[in-house]
Amino acid sequence: MGSAHSRSALRTKIHSLCFNLGLPSLFVTINPADTHSPVALYFAGVVLDLDRVLPEVLRTSYERAQIIATHPVATAKFSNCLIKSILKCLVLGGVLGPTK
Image 1 (tube, rainbow, N blue to C red):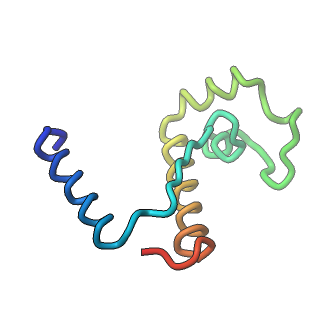
Image 2 (tube, rainbow, N blue to C red):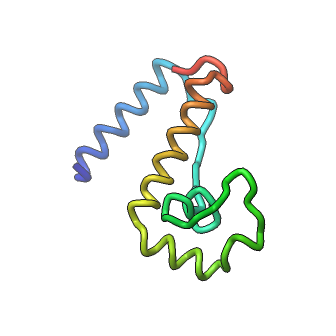
């Protein structure tokens, strides 16, 4: 994994898929900002009412970053939950139409 030969083989595979199926028409970059998300704070153990999140209930940016940095498992759970939800709604839910 990661050698020049394996990268070349994967590049060849991508080119063959593009030739066979056509160019992909959508590229999505997902960049979750866990220090700004109330859900990540909730997974980290902060008591929040997720139905009514008010700015005064959330802590300062520095405090939120400290909480997230000290709870790596909560950050992983948040990222997993977010990616699963995005894939479920966009790809499996059919918002983007039929996908291969």
